[in-house]
Each structure stands twice: as structure tokens, then as C-alpha cells.
Image 1 (cartoon, rainbow, N blue to C red):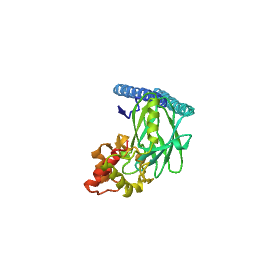
Image 2 (cartoon, rainbow, N blue to C red):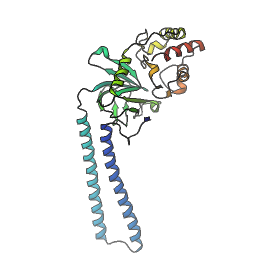
Image 3 (cartoon, protein in one colour):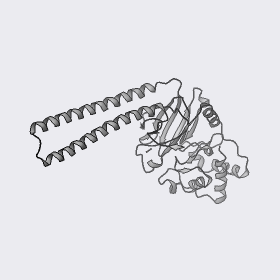
Image 4 (cartoon, helix red, strand yellow):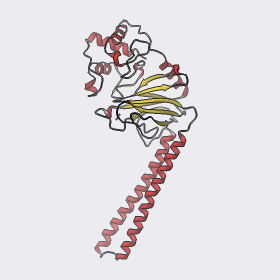
Length: 310
Ligand code: CUA
């Protein structure tokens, strides 16, 4: 199930935020009901002549005092939640991921204590259930905002200034995230998915991500690889284990293992992939990837190669 929902938290940070949300909702509901009741009472009284000036002054004073108490209470509740989240961020042995926001996609660099175990992926995060995930957040161009509501709160990504956000999933699932700060034309198509797996399953995924792309066996895919390396693709994209090492666009080493293309814009199928390569602007107008008017044979070869990148 793929959800983006603040009301069903899948981790302790999101659950803590939901408590604040519940308290705020309850208080606002009480205020709304009280105001409505006072209004109806005033209508009813109005017909039989108004209240005395003294009674009116006392009533208004009480209402003002109650409003002030309510506001102070919410301010304190918000600060308490913030402190609680800050304490929860001090977890031992977190998984560290450096997330870099670009117009309009997410780069994810998985960091390990031994640098040779680092790897890079895009638009999909995989995390182990029950282990804290420390996200280092940066922006490459303009301000973006990282938001996966099932797992935690929002955090802005500001160019030139790193921010940190800690999350934890306590049950497996797929949680949708969305850039939550307007960042240009395709802000809406800047989604990411977080896959929370049991620990062993996560380790297997990470181990596979560390391996370079396998050499294609099929003749068609082999030709696609050559096209990728010698054409314009390699100027922007990296595929580990090949000559392509561009750094402007998503790392495609294990592209075929992803469920969507173009930051959650379309499902990752051969048809969508071919359409995206030929004319990305019909899917995502304004995107940095240029159109690639390839011959049908070349396109088939390229798609065969990219689809082999498990
Ligand atoms: Cu990135 Cu909105």
C-alpha cells in the first residue's frame, strides 16, 4: 500500500506530531462550539431586549481570558512537541542518508562508515524498520521541503545550509513523500517513496545497490549500453560499472529496480521509459532532460539496456 497520510503514523516521530494535531483539533472544536452557542444565545436574547451593559462586559472579559489561555496552551504544546522530537533525534547508530533536492527530483546518497560501501540512488528511499534514519538535507538550486507525513514532519532544504531530520518506521510499508515548498513549474511532480523493510530485507537491497550494473547479455541491450555511453545520456547520468559518469541527473545504476520514473511522475514500465526518453517534456514540462529524437531501433536498444539495470 502506498500512502501519504498524516492521520496514520508509521513511526514514533509522526505519532508524536499526530498527538499535537489531535490536541489542536480538540481545542479548536471546543472554541467553535462555544462561539456558535454564544451566537445562538445572542440571537435568542436579542428578540427579548439586550443584556445589561455590565453583564456584556463581564462575558466579553471572560471570553478574552479563555482565548488567551487557549493560545498560550497551544504555544506550550507546540514547544513541548518540538523538544520531544529533538530528544528522539539523539538515537544511536542511525542509518545516514544525504538527501539532495534538485529541480525536480531527489538524490539519495547512502553513507557508510567505510566509504567504499556508499552508494547513490534517486527518488526512492529504502530504510530498515525499527532503526533511526538520520537524513542530512541539502538543496542544489532553490528551496525545497522534505515531507513524508507517515514518518515525520516537514523540513525545508535551503541552498548552502544543511539541515537534519530523523525518522523511524515501526512497520513495513511504502510511504509517499512530496516536496512541500513551491520550487518551480514541476514542484507537484517532485514526489519520493520510502520503502520500509525488515532489517535483513533492507540489507539485501543495500548490498545489491552497492554492486555495479551487470553487463547486459542480450545483443540488443549491449547495443543500448554503447549508445548510452557514447551518446548524450552519459553527459548527465551515471551508471556504475560503465563509462557513463555524468553528475547532473539521477544515477541510473539500478534504474529497473525503481517503481516510478521522473520522481513519481509515471510508473516504471518499458512504454513510459521509452516515452520519457523521446519526449520528457510531455510528461513533465520544463524538466532539465532534453528530448531525444532517436530512431526506433536505437530507442528499443536503449530501453532494453535500461530495463536490464536491476
Ligand atoms: Cu521541490 Cu517543490
